[in-house]
Image (cartoon, rainbow over all chains, first blue to last red; front, side, top):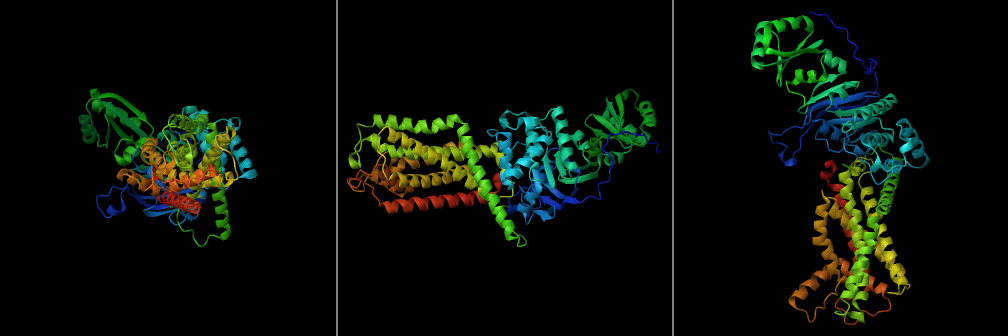
Length: 332
Length: 288
């Protein structure tokens, strides 16, 4: 049945990055938001339930998951805002559990909510950040000039941060996060609240950072954003359910996904199972099918379901399909 | 986890550089307070004009119905209280910004930086106290220019005492502001606790003597005598009016040495408490 469709997926060049140095190695992370007294209780809900993660130099790594999947908890553990309950995190060789202050020197963080002082100018905000990391004087000037010009912010440097647009603010946050030249750059939902143009600019900036050898780790609930990353880990209910390049993840599902809108989901599902021995999945009011050769199958399905079909489409598997295939849940 | 013991592998040089980074961070945070203060003109005017207005209104209004130790009228009596009020207000507004910093997100980037927590406290307290101190001095200079009091050698110990009181007030403000999630909560505590603390310090009315007191006055007088700010007020009053003898008819008249010692101990105590609070609570980290 292998009749591969040649796909031009527009990926970033498929350079193998597995031989690059590991920057962040997390293993066996578990976390629950409860008081210490109730830890022994068996009814504990784990916000994070046994997650392993490795990011490498120069790689953009996306943690993809819907709200409540545990990615924010993982992010907070990585930026040392939460104490580690179970498991270990090593960043650039330092252990987060025993030496969080040393780890903080190795990470740059861009939070989802802004962290700029609106009453200060761009330059002053960056100087504040510099002081927190012991970067002052001519060294501060040099790095600030360099980063501002890389992110096209030089002409806005004397503006008050309160007057900047959302996209510009996010770029200033990136300058703040990169000022101490961290090995690992952590971004929490970096595209939230940005218009498409600003998102493109932000991605250019992120790529600039990763090309310099920074390991970039971002959380996101946007499928199209995760698609741009070098590697994606899909999170669901505190667990990592899949990991790989976006292309790898999608090719696991075969070459095509058939989506059927139908007037009677149950009857259609039954027919597909019994007559065609397929494994359809119900997603909302739709039926989805993964198949290696969807085109020949299309004819069979339309013959079988006839008037039950309102519409039928064929597409390449998206990360959303990967999520649905692995969890059976809708990505939302 | 800011209070984690550093591993023995770290060299002294590293510790020295992180201490230097801590001081530079604290200095930057203090300077930031200063910059922010002067960029908010309404804050500058409010902090000076409000106490000035209080002083003029209450001073003139209550002038006739008042007699105190040293034979002063109410305007003269209330002047040291006004200086304390300026310091209190400025310290409150400086430390309330901790809540805004956290809500607006600025604090999160400070909390994940490698310098730890003490620069946060140091920056806020020193920055806020410096603003309060300069405002109090500006007010005093205004008073001297308009001859409501005369300048003397006692100006030097006076400004030293005001600096100590300023630091104490800012630390107190941090104790209130740090665990708060909203500025409304701070206002509630301010009206319930900080304003009464100021009112019951002998700034607005004299502390009644034990003799000839009714039971109510004795309770009030007792509360006022355990208020450390009362001791600071006595000394501030003496230093503003070095020529006036307050020992006659005064209900509460501790020695200068006692006043200084109590002020210094109280400042150290509230600052230490603020440090414990700022260092200890992890809960506030995750309010993002």
